[in-house]
Length: 121
Image (tube, rainbow, N blue to C red; front, side, top):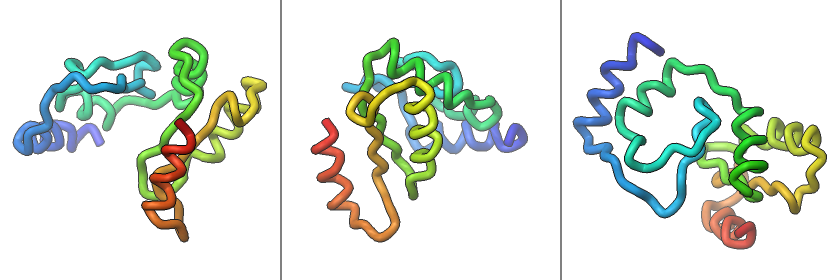
């Protein structure tokens, strides 16, 4: 992935990926820290291509330190449901203390999942 980094960054910049301060902070699974909008530039996304992810540490930290109790996966399938269940069990939390909502699940419509997002908040 490192070899694609420069091209990826150039394409992101070319297509207007810009820095904005959003309503919700981004919690990075690379740094296990909150990344504020002004730091999420094309260089940040390029770094993700070559950096190792410590998903376990990131999830535990966001739940414990940022008081997050609902995790939303944005992706084509619920790939993180198993790892999140394992992390929740290791942390000794109930589902109500750390819920997980995937945005897309095979066999369910996007509309159904959008309603699930509303119910989880």
